[in-house]
Length: 95
Image (cartoon, rainbow, N blue to C red):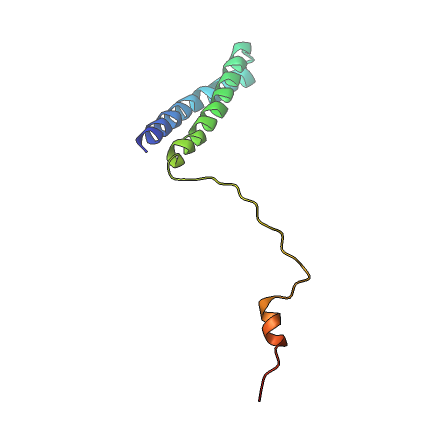
């Protein structure tokens, strides 16, 4: 419901805000060889992965009260038994 919606907006906003920082820090490291820029780039990359996991984890709040999970054993079908259609075809017709 609403909690999921607000969390998704928060995670998306943080992801979008971290993207320019990620690009800028990578370019600083790649073009200017500034070593701390790669640390910032790595932190932004890991935070992007974390935010993506959090965003998709909001599915729990979406389906929490709407889905019932159950496990049941389905018996194996016997392969040698004729089907009902085959049994009907085997009955001779009376004329």
